[in-house]
Length: 64
Image (cartoon, rainbow, N blue to C red):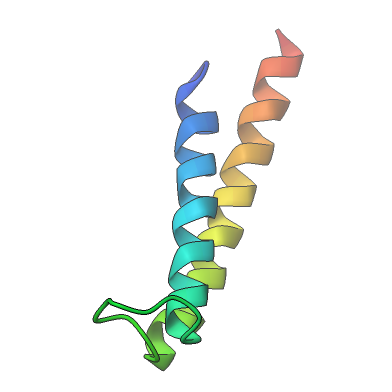
């Protein structure tokens, strides 16, 4: 995975993880994920994985 792909996937994972977290905590309503503890727990994990992928992608781009 070179170029822009890890950056895009990492950013997408961070945004999705943040959204899942706030939905799981009940701040965003109108979803089946609202007030569900599982999403409040999985959201930060997905966001953390996204940050790692972003960091890895940025590090790879700097080496070129």
